[in-house]
Length: 142
Image 1: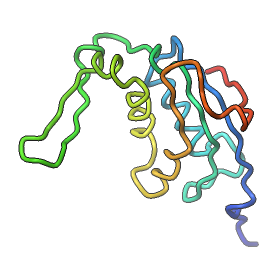
Image 2: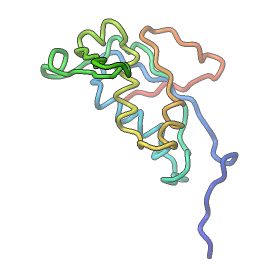
Image 3: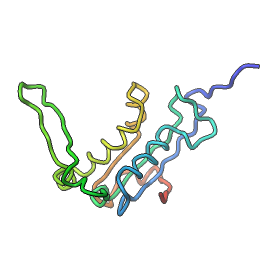
Image 4: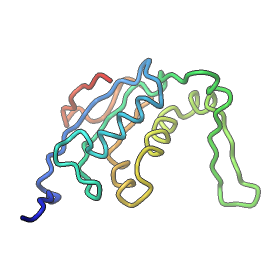
């Protein structure tokens, strides 16, 4: 008997809306990554993208526990000599809160082409408004 593998067109894609207000960043990111990978579906296959789309609103109101606001450092390199840029979580939360949530979720996805495809199904907005009303996302409570 052969093993069944869903093809790309057979996997139904749904849209979910998550309100990040008051949510702890890491706990929310792990649940979102699970939805993006498709682990909540019975047809989950590790090497196929079976996940759904996720829209996160109110990213600016996400919580960090402990002293992470001051001690957590986000780093990236510009590509130029001496171009290492370091920013604290407090700075990221005020300047680019959506990027902070995207970074947390991307860190919990596979580090492959498949993981990048999963990350493209994530939309994060700092405020309560989003542009995906036409997709009629279902609200999810985490």
